[in-house]
Length: 458
Image (cartoon, rainbow, N blue to C red; front, side, top):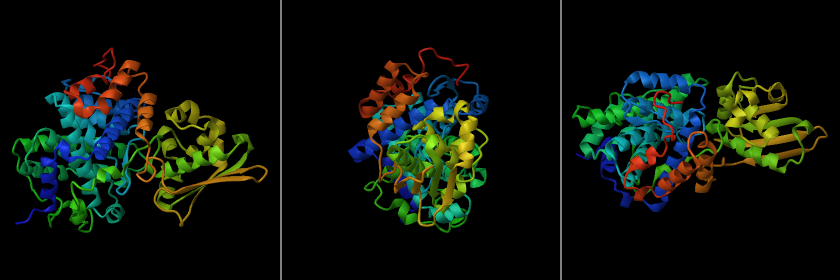
């Protein structure tokens, strides 16, 4: 009997070696890891981080696993909280064809098991590639437009597979155990867009990380699960969450074409679908030689889906809605010519003049000629002069990539306050030469502040 899609992915995940991963793909994985660490350090500033910390602490009282940026929790608690930290301030990676974040699900359980088992950097890098590739491959097999039309949100659905794959590879699973881990991961797939506009969409990611960890550890105990979860006729992922999906796409050129290279990175906080707006707005501002006082109107054109999701926050309540608001983002870029977490602190987004500008002088419209993350930004002055910029591909997309140096700069931006200057440079070196690192514990320990605060994580 020929292998089904689940078994093919399991065989790939169980057998992949570092030598089989092209240098370009290894570098993409290092960028994903460094970006995830930068996001996690920034995530301590998240509005809901302490609420997730309380939940993570309540799961168990042991403290064997490290939190990025300080403290220790249980294996499960650290996986959950690190997953939330990576996505907390809305600037982690996105696999654009499935609108799924990848690192928040894959990296936390991988770090926890690598620390526990004293894995090598080479093993960590290999398992990271496995986890990211499996997540994105499961995703492209879903037939995303159909999957999305049914209301599903990708990270909580496909994330458990990647998390299980990464842990399984680190633990040396054979193909049969890996396939059962996928069956257990799929049994926990969940998360819908009913959560949109609330922090629950970010909970989907960290819950996906924990689900994958549990799936792998339970499979390792010999727990029985289906080995054809993706394509099972009755209740399989592709038949239940989609219309049968595209299982051939999930395994086409497996190990030859790397889907993980299609994961986009974000230099700026805010939702993935407004990264085109941000790119366009910075381009327009660069051409504009006046100040915000000279501006009569800012016009933003977005495709229909980004407009439906981000053009509805002309007035925004607090940080999370500001992060989602096309109106606020355009206004603050014009005023500050910058977009970091500082622009999403109350002292900035609560400025009455800025709130009025966003509500009254930023116009956001849907343009049917635009698609995906395309955007057009126009700055119209009081004397009628117009400056415009069109974005075809947002900065960070595979077609318009950021450099590794850009990700290093992002890490340097958000590490201070958590790590010393020496720790920052040591971490950058450890990730850059990950395959040479004798122990992943060196990297993980370097992400702890010099004065540890086990009782207070954030």
